Picture 1 (cartoon, rainbow, N blue to C red):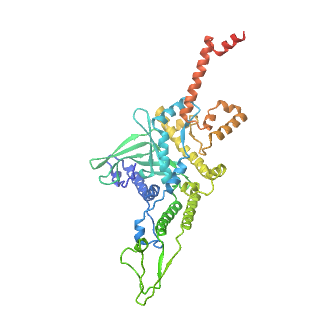
Picture 2 (cartoon, one colour; picture 1 turned 120 degrees about the vertical axis):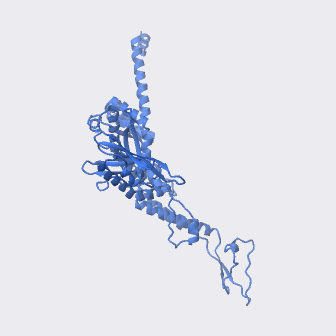
Picture 3 (cartoon, rainbow, N blue to C red; picture 1 turned 180 degrees about the vertical axis):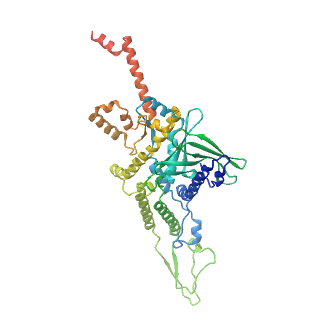
Length: 473
């Protein structure tokens, strides 16, 4: 979904929209408009669409206009963390609830949808989940970026008071801008669908018995002052990116200059020029310097070739600064050490990023748990509070953000099972080994088949136990 450039206040004047809801819709639109410039700016940094900001010192203006270096460090900062937050289904204490959640997870492709929403969350500060009914009792889980949604926070209830999403939009003819055609407004007791047709907006109300808005924010680094979180593309990240782009431009100019010898003529009576390209003298096959009218010959002096090492070192310094503010190893930004790093050094460099991923999973897990409760409420025809208080202990399951090797992970699990034997009979062991939910289902199914086959063999007398007894006789 592209960035919507327009969200008209005409939506608040939609036909059939209740008067008390008009002010709410205007507030949501104003919130969206106020945040859009910052969100759009971070989107440009993420996509690498930021041009060099020349200071007018290191290069001529004519060259600055021609050189167009790009840096994708903000995208690296987003994806380095997103790649370590992998949703792997849900766990519960109730088998029936587990089976329902597995069906919901598969029907909505929630694993892939989570990653898409996660990238939007890290880019803009927040992503939004919505849960609606398809009319047949099946939950439809959707995700929206901050560029297509807005919400108002309720400090007392610690949840959103109301929210708005652009559910559908169309591309403006001849441009890449998108125009909203369907807007959903989520309130505690209803869902308002506002559609655009024939030049007018029309509102339709669907009652909501969930007991809360059918919308859940997923915020990155939320605080009491900023309940919707903060973008991973911070002001520091954007500032360092600007410096890196400018340094890339300097390096391009320096690289071009270094390919040509720096020739100087000393002692000439006047400036010597051929009136054409200033590089002709260095690129010609035969060069000639003639005597002046007094018979004197100017001195030819060649300066030392430009060294790129200081420029490269400053670029590496910028990469180290980016690593410091994002907790991403400096090697991710194209600056590596001369000597190969040991496995322990690599693990130590990744530790801050792994800690960030664990905190991210914990915060996002709370949002996903609420989404799961709302989806179960749609399936069971209940409400959010009923599913939350049912005691099924619903929790999202994550793959390990540390990406340990299979050998070290297996060795650690083996030692834990030896120390706590009851772990051997729990699915927690399979989770620790990073088996996916599909693999765990196959293991459970195959185990049941083996147990059933063994029972049949015992009943028919064809099992291993009978054969062993006959051999012993």
